[in-house]
Amino acid sequence: MATVGQLQKQFVDFSTSLYREGFLDDQFIQLQKLQDESNPDFVFEVVSLFFEDSEKLLNNLAIALQQQVVDFKQVDAHVHQFKGSSSSIGAHRVKNMCVAFRNFCEEKNLDGCLRCLQQINHEYCLVKNKLENVFRLERQILEAGGTIPLIA
Image (cartoon, rainbow, N blue to C red; front, side, top):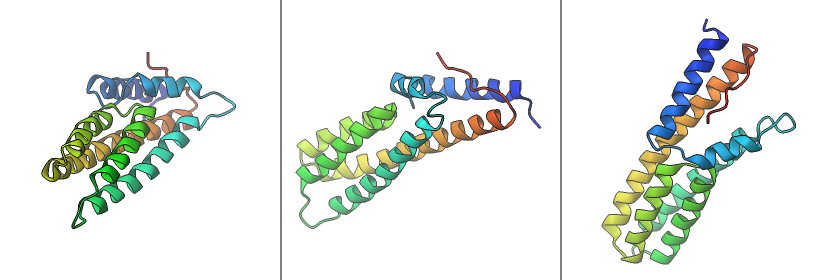
């Protein structure tokens, strides 16, 4: 059984790597600063909503790109929404993929859009997995009686 100190170190190391590797940006730190005793699950709830929205958006994008005649305006609207929600939780690499995706929408480049959809799916799965790990570590720290270290 890991001690509180070991869990906290693991949490700090893992969280720091997410910023270093560009999965998250400062926006995620801003979210964490909004969380307090009165709203201890704030970040988890916001990120869970992001996961739900993302699953829907990815599904809608896949459907939109499979149409006989692709409505690039509609695709772009979905990508724009995805860019906004990933930006609001600090999912940096997903947001950056959305920027590239929107350029392909503008060019009405179906192959580019399909490639971007695959890459966005991949980046989204990575960041989702990593955030789930962050929340799991937070739970373990709290269950062990510790406090969540702040990442500067």
